[in-house]
Amino acid sequence: MGTIVKKGKVYYCVYRVGGKQKWVKGGTTKRMAERKLREILHEIDTGTYREIKEIGFSDFANLWLDSYAKSKLKASTFRSYQDIIRCHLIPYFENVRLTSISPATIQLYVPKKKEEGLKAKTIINHLVLLKEMFKHAVIWGYLKQNPSIYVERPRVEKEEMEILTREEIKKFLAEVTPQYYCLFLMAIETGMRRGELLGLQKGDIDWHNNQIRVRRAMWKGRFITPKSKSSIRNVDISDYLAQELRKHLLSSPPCEMDLVFCNKKGRPLRRAGVKRIRFHDLRHTNVALRIAAGQNIKYIQRQLGHASIQTTLDKYGHLLRETNTQEAKKLHSLLGLKTSKKSLLENC
Image (cartoon, rainbow, N blue to C red; front, side, top):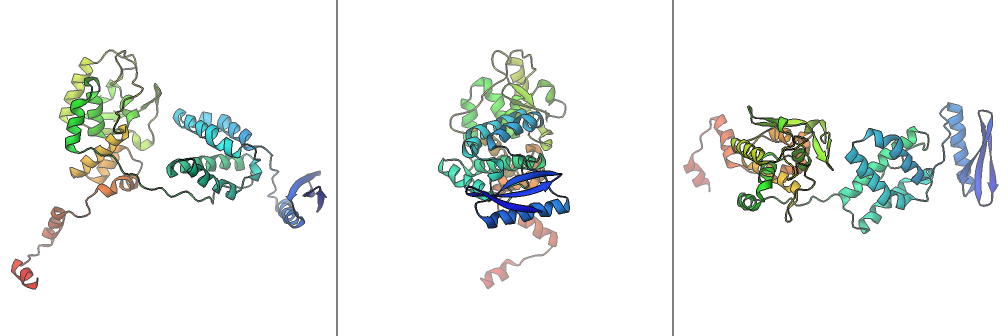
């Protein structure tokens, strides 16, 4: 049994569980409190009752970072989440109790961040983080349900990729500082990510089979595991690239970490980019070249280290030619049908 008690402008649900009397805020109206009390008594009767612990969002965010994220996530992911929480989530939810956060509260976060100039993809990353945090809040007894489940994500507009043409590639490589020529050549020919290239060690080169073994990446001067299981792969290289790699290694300074690409002091490269194009666009350029060369899309997926072929198609499907006369001719030849040019002309 339970009852409703009004104190000031707030109605409280008063009930007993485990031999102890409990007071829980029911709302600003008696009807809200009665509905809340019915839910609580039903949970007690069915054995599903759980006492929810009170905590503010800021305190819970820090608890989640220390208790879960720090030990379970990659260092790069942890740092990224830490920055999002500190710079965006805590300022927005700072003085809010966790149990007071509703789907509507979270939904309003989307337009607010759009007004601040954040891209849709960035806001989605914030929502993904919130969903993960609230999932643990439910497990740890701070929430009954995850309020972020039904929040609608902002629509992501596909961004134009900067892809170098063959002539632009030649001009670009001709102007690259000799020390970085092999690095950029490998980025263009293999499509490897920047971190994968900077984390490449000499023992990762299979000279006999002309392959690069991608086993790690470099992040802030430290080795980390690749982005995903699919990122651990063997990447094929051309004879020309293998030759340029040999030249590069002969002219490189000794490196304690046995890196293929390092600075003049033998230390890891922290930054290697160009002013007019992002380093990652060299990866896009590589895909465009592979598609132009007629490589199988499944092979491209494996070489890039994408987790699924759908990821490759979603990102680069628009680069595939929608019509290919030669491929149509191959299909037609299998049928063994002959077309009379005369009859076609007459019909026109």
